[in-house]
Length: 381
Figure: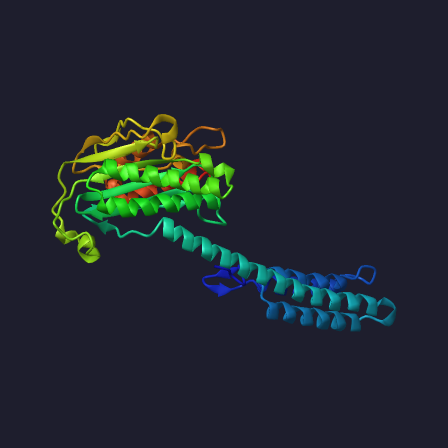
């Protein structure tokens, strides 16, 4: 989305106040100074400032006002102190150039806004919005792209209900740019399909590895040499089924009334070299000690052996999954963000932070505070 006038106060356009104040200031100074130093020629700056902050018609208006102000102030001086017509031509020419520059700026802003809309559409395909209550789960997610202009990178996540339980994926494609997004889209598409149909989590893992290898083969055929070695880390989790609700009935899946109160349960997980999940509860934070296998796309090196591990989870524990944009975030001194320690301290002081929405917001705020808002990698929580 592009904004014609970036300066607003409580929703009202106030950008015009800047060139207006400058116009008044120049006229006043020219009135107060003596004939040895005429300020009125500086009025050519006014439409230039308007071109940077306002729309085309507002810029044109200030161009006209600048010319009128020049003629008015020049007329009050005796003939020997007037600046003359060459300076007036400069003011007129400056106003015309300002209007043209403003039109070019707005056209470029519209083009950038169009690109951002495309990036947003791409992002919503790979990182589709998910309901807060789905398939018996309460979930929340936040994605922050290191490239604030494109707003999309190689991180991906999704939730897929099925008759065999609910499957969750969080991953990070190696590298950046549109090719990383393409690889992420391929993996997410495979997860959505096989996460619904496959009876076992190991089958889902195998199909995702196959999809990554197919992407690499396609990239090689297209002559994209760098893509042949692209890989992705991911955490693939399976939650047990807790209801007989039809997984195709999205309304039933999103209604908490169709699901019993949470109890202790066991999750399945395949860790493709990803950051291990954290179980967050009012009692503290514990890391789920997984045995990682090779990342997706590297089975040709070590074989495709996917170990499905099982872990108990208490009813009051919230699983926290992040990408390395969180754990590898550094402050100005180069110190990594201490995720478990920071979250443990905050949850200990406020147990309500285990709520998914509050928890992901907490991680986001703490990471941004730690890095002072300077993210060097995509961040997904």
